[in-house]
Image 1 (cartoon, rainbow, N blue to C red):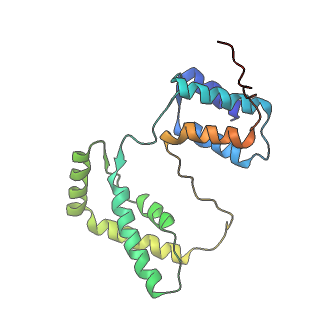
Image 2 (image 1 turned 180 degrees about the vertical axis):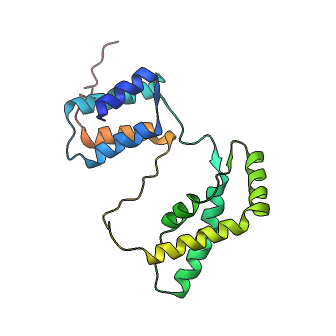
Image 3 (image 1 turned 45 degrees about the vertical axis):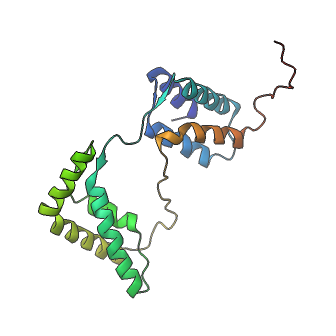
Amino acid sequence: MSIEKIVEQALQDGYLTPAMEAEVGRICDNASELSIEEYMALDRLMGSLLTGEVVAVPRKQFINVMEELVLTEAIARVAEIEATSESSLEVGDIAAYALNRLPPLYATTEEGANYQRQRAQAELEELIFQQVSEAISRYLDRPSFFPERQALGKNTGNEVVRQVSALLQAYAPNFEQKSDGQDSD
């Protein structure tokens, strides 16, 4: 999808979703130069975000407690392995493998998150350990193809305006003519 289509959709819906934000970022990262139409679309998006005509949907209004539990276990295990061997492991790859084999534990409040943590410790601790162990084993045995892989970016909904502004400044520093200070009152 093009930047213009994404902006058109955001203006029509009144929302900029995380997927739309990511696509705009991907297009800008991969383009050697943006067209004037793309600059204008980004400028419209920036203005719409600033006026509230378009609202950036937050990335998460809920958490998956399983993610923090798996990450905690994976980080501890990876640190042990890396301290005692020459191996270098990717925590993200290991956590993703394990998470794909574990039940999600979503919560929208801190109380709900605490409940899910307690439940996981009582019922799922051994399963989490097993899946992280399996993930590490698979990671160590994996073939080394696709060395050009790129990790996912870390964008948040609150950074949309800053990112669009930075993109406009980087790719179109002279797009808008600056005032010469002779405004009439």
